[in-house]
Length: 504
Image (cartoon, rainbow, N blue to C red; front, side, top):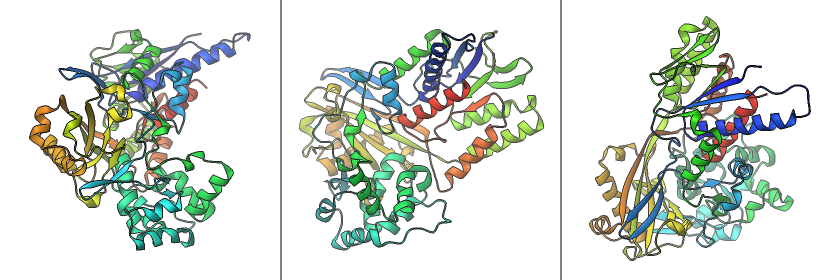
């Protein structure tokens, strides 16, 4: 029996996770058929990456300075354990016991207000207040705001024919304007770099969206879940629940290397951009200047590339397919093109601890849009994971840009650093920008252009139409963060489902 040949175009997390799950699933099927007369088809993988490294936006830099050694992640520096897809994969690969937990103290997140930071009320999880007393004593809400929050259980549930709603509209309707402006908007913006008025509840907050329809109230739903033990995290801390995260000792690049190792270096082709794909009688041809002859024909091709690249490659095969398939490609391209993206930048600096006058006891903070600051959110990477820096230095990661402030990205790197340093001076007492820049062990500005898809109202309708059209394009699969969720865990979950589908 001829091997099943699968090409993965794109070596970011999605492509690597898809390849890894294909390897694992193929091994499972081989084991299951050991004592049966029929053996599963052997799987041959080829992964094509246009750049000189795999990992995409996940990258770790190890920096040696006179102040000591630093480990800095340019993208995600940890992953969530809920949903459990990333942790499950680590367990299957035998590395779960090696993962780091964030340091036990300082796990609660904070919110910027004026020239300082205020803790998010204990038990407030995105938009579910689970501890009434903490909500009634927080300075983030006025007496009127607290009274409005308490009235949530008396707010009528939404109309049954409403299929989607903006996060802003939902929170304003159920919890009130103050709770939206002062707590929920900064938390959501810190995750999605989005405008809460346009962000889809159905696509990004489905469990909470469903609570209203099932229980009529978030308060009633939360109480029921606590009583039933359905969600033990309700008793946890506030905001980002850092106990539900893990990291690799040497940074997230270790995860990337682990996944690449599962695929095998001989099956990963770096500096190998794919120019076009086409349908032939022998299979799907993948073409590029550096694609070796004999490596170009496949039974399946997985597009794990940015949406713009996926559109270009799909259009390149239109001349080799039927009119019906070509029409389906047009629908996919139109759907992907209708999904907006946001660009961001991360300013990473390692500053002497004595340059911070008011070091907060927290791993991170978010900034409400109404504060009109350039910084969206910040984290103290070396406070979460002390192994990342010498004790006398703090690694600060500040996030800027997004949908609400794309203009800041028009500045030079140096100017962005100065803007961030000035705002950190207000919020945590960071010393003057010039001093910080001079005394920092290092400063980096990492730009991610069009890296964050915006799940706007009606997003699920768009993605359902895209997936329906993709089903009419035989042999081609689409894996993109515009469909199926953003974040490491959802991407890995989607990769597993893709592998199971291809090897069904």
